[in-house]
Image (cartoon, rainbow, N blue to C red; front, side, top):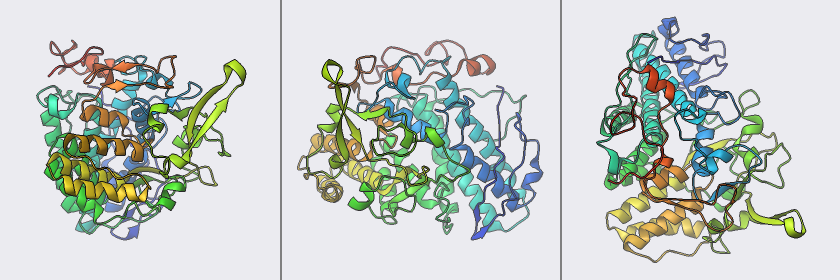
Length: 499
């Protein structure tokens, strides 16, 4: 396998055990296929700067090698996920339209599969360098522990993303091919790894995350760096991982650990536009600055938003079937607006949302994880364990805050009610595709979904939801058999997986 490994040159500061690394202590390497400058790891200050480069890579332009406006790491992955679902639509005037209409973007030789693969494996290789070399750095042991703990957590999260994008969900696919696992830095001559099983992949995910959690005990990040992993972010990711694995007691346990540290999003915070990383309910976010921002390609620029003073593609709108889920008095529904374009026979009406609005500088912060998701994780986990009373008590906390009608259902109907509440609460935050996969639900678009390609139905466990491995990986990695599974290692593009 030819590993394309870039540690980005970043003028960034970071927090090590309460002290700031200066802006001059950044990792300055030219793009290459290997980390040949291990001198940066001579000190913990240099190791922290290398880790800063990894954090920056997670939201940087071109971090997936596509070098286009929909290649911005985590924010792009979130928007891809939402475009694959039933609630957010693309009107075709901007980016992500081909994701929305499923016109082949999960195929091996379309740029999207390569973008997602490259983003994650570049990040893994850079994290492997941090994990491998930090112990030999000169500095305090506690600094090394915090740096390594973050790197392990980030690697676990990265493999988790790969597992969800490139294979069916764990509950039905744990014996099917996973993704190649690398735990040491690679160079051009490194032999490519086989896919192993999805269970192998999840074993690595849990190994990294559970090792990282105690290592970050006592680590306090600066409020200026909401993208940095602390112990609560690791616990939140663990809740997500166990949720996908249907390990409901563990998903509940870790969600409640996070809930003990963060309040829920208030009605006022919900109405403020989702752009402030200082919101008390935000567990993990991406702060945009003048130097580091997505500009005209941020999620804010994608939403059809009549009051945005900055440039907008005005392409993300909402479906009628989604708007119908809300009670009229729900504060989330009050952020919707019926919008009309054209006149006479060409007049079209659709719903727009004011949930995401830029700040005055046109570079608002972007949310990745907040406490409300953890509450919904805990509620769903309780419901799956037959603890309906506790599940409803958790759900009611959120519904009362949103002025929504309390759910009175029980059993399987309660689980479905919690899943609907997830859609209502978390839309636009990157959960649609991943929730559809883990719950094994099909895509059923109705109402005003656009008939130029978006008005489609796909069955549960469709291979159209799963990205194929990039063609270059299949060609260059000699450990892979370039045939469609089960004859080889390539994911099918079409059809349905029937467990």
